[in-house]
Length: 453
Figure 1 (cartoon, helix red, strand yellow):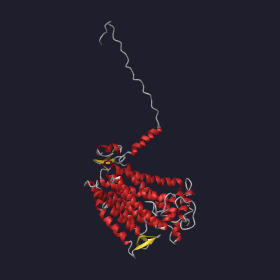
Figure 2 (cartoon, helix red, strand yellow):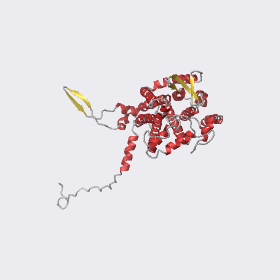
Figure 3 (cartoon, helix red, strand yellow):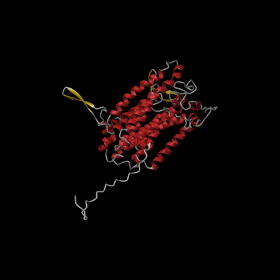
Figure 4 (cartoon, rainbow, N blue to C red):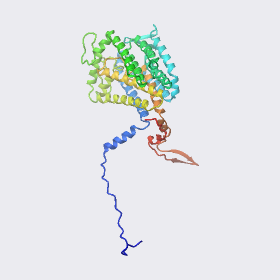
């Protein structure tokens, strides 16, 4: 130890401690928000939302179909579970279609676009052949398959337009042709108008509205100019006004918007008013599953178009908000899949399916609430009807396949390990090797492409 100038040993000074930082109070709400944000941003969030949300909607729909259709079945001298059994069979077939679509590669989806479109156009043309097509509730858009089984080809026309339109626009984008307005419109708009014409020959304007929404969704995703978009929208609106003005039935439905009591004359608004009665009598938690009063002959189409009203009466505001939340989550997940992909076909197909399901749900629920005219479209994945359930479940399988095909999600799925480790044989003894359960976002960060948002 060196001595100082005075000969005394140097004085050792204690190291100065850093000033303590002011403690930040632990905010549980902030911690919960951060955890929710991290979970929301994981690569598999859209995958789980689509799979879980759609399955919950289907299961709850089966329960409500069984509850809402019992009285109708008994009035027709049928077993009380008649409609439920048919819907359950359709759900099983739809489950197989969903699984197959979710496991198909994107190339196979694109290859199926033209065959599905050709089959849909052929079946929709068969509806107009006497002896083959049949009318239900004034609309000629059904084909009898024998016995009590029928099929509505226009429901498959929605799926056909989504797949074929997405493939068409993606191929034109690859060839740098979308900058020309004629390539933007032709042949997408003429084929869409062909499908709309076949649908309107049977008088089903509700399905035509959904098909029009899909068309505009594809044009919007393709980046159609405002003038072009407004021009096509003006033509479609003009045709819609003419079709409504020339039909007393459609004018009567339009007059029932906001009705609170039945009226005399053509616009009696019986169905719309009793739908409001069912929702109003449900309260917060409803009257109980199976305890609906309006389904006892007062509310027409209780298990199809107006099943949301029976849900509000039996499950109350809590049940209806749950259904709305599930559809909102499904719509958000579809938008997220379309926004994060670099594949043009996946973007257009995911956007088209999301537009289809959300637009149909808004039109159905808006009609039950008295905010929109009754269009006669079912609530997707929820209402009774196998013809509507099968193509919709196939479309959900498309979204699941697209969500799995995301590079970050694919890496996360590939690197998932059993939570409690796996067994490894070591001689005659079996030992368990533990695995760390890291977050999927950390594992997939290396595989995330530079263009991914």
